[in-house]
Length: 268
Image 1: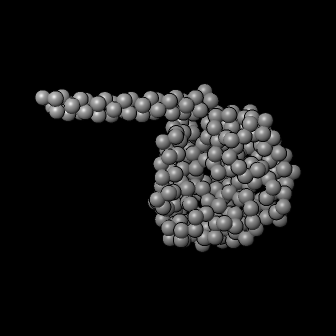
Image 2: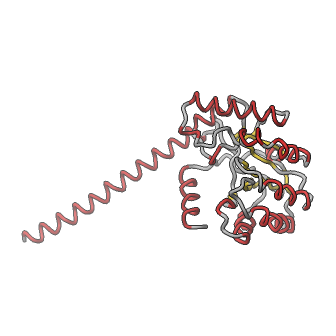
Image 3: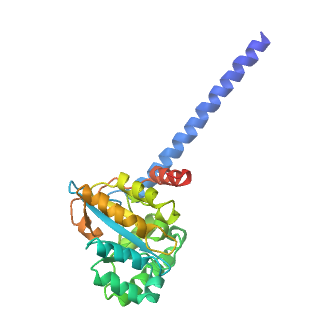
């Protein structure tokens, strides 16, 4: 009888443990979601990942933060393929030291946005530091390009609600992406092409890189362009996309961010 009592108690304790663990997890989800509501609610500034449109429009975007070996081959591909619209997000220190490449980007008619100043996670900075970083990047890009940028892609795609609020107050629209080429990982040309083409959709913003670490982007780009054009897609600038229909309201939340990190970790 005593043994039966202990077994029943053990089962009850185990059941209570799982109920308690489930309650803690549920509370955690509510906490995370409440944070998302405050960051991504309609009343607060938000980041753009894609645009809701039925038109087969796609924005190719290229981040540059260092190096001078990859931008020119990418620009050559875009010119050879007669792609007249694309958006380059440039870090201000890189812009200051590569005026000739900037001239080529502008001569080919491509849009330029800011990729910030110091290449670090801005969510880890104080509000004063965030302001200084964005102010510095805007001033340098205005000087080097002749126009103050109004598009901003934050280093590492990292931000929080403070960064969004400050960026908005300084006249920036924060631009993220829906399709990540993962070209900087140099997994192979075919892998980059297949990843982009399989995920692309109307109103998509595609993330690519023109920094020196991305050694295969210029090799994958021609096939990406050919395959997407064969599907009827037209390449436009980010601003062109924003001028389409209403920006999607379902901004990426913590769970989506976790999923992207998981995909990166397992090589998807």
